[in-house]
Length: 307
Image (cartoon, rainbow, N blue to C red; front, side):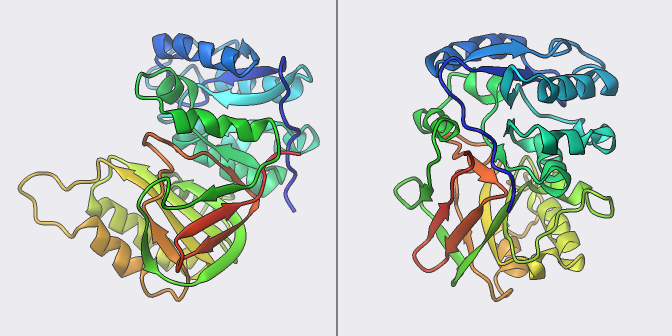
């Protein structure tokens, strides 16, 4: 069983860090009003406004902010400002044992997938795959349902995803239970062959991505196939794959054909169409908790992520 972090309460302080690329500072400022509505105070990491090429500060600076927020007992949870690129550059230097001994809410997605996987493997911590402050919350497109998903941080609640939220499609039927793992497909593939390689055995695998053409998604799924990660899974949840159209004028398999080829004959339930990922609304989920995927009824049920 993974460690579920303590729930948030009104008046708690959360830490805001930029573990990857520089966040849009204007969107970040706009997002703070939402935190106020939730009854939260916040504190920025020391390096959240830094820019170091395509990174939000040097690896040492971004790592220091992550460590500082976990070490400070006044900080009850950590919400990432944005993703982009770069969290994997220092993951092998994170004090994951310290995080295990000081569990708290950690929330983000996209490039943050690499950190989720590391914390799941070595901190034994439930973390949250959800919309981030500058890249989602501070934008005009931020959806009411995305906002509601933050309530799971304040009280233990079972999440139910049905077709009332979005149309879903069964790629393969059946029912499976298991620990929910995964996130951004390209980041999961980048962990292959490292100590941060995702363990999918008996687990429900969530995949999502953005801006990847069908041939690229094909290559990533093929790598997971050859590594045994697809056959090991108990079920597969296909989240949002935004901007996945092939470039104009190029012959291509459709995304549906790619998914059918790799995921349709595994003998496990596979359902696509979940609004989880680079989309609005973005249905936030805890990673590391038990969940059930029903490929026949097209439902996903997830146990609470906080104590």
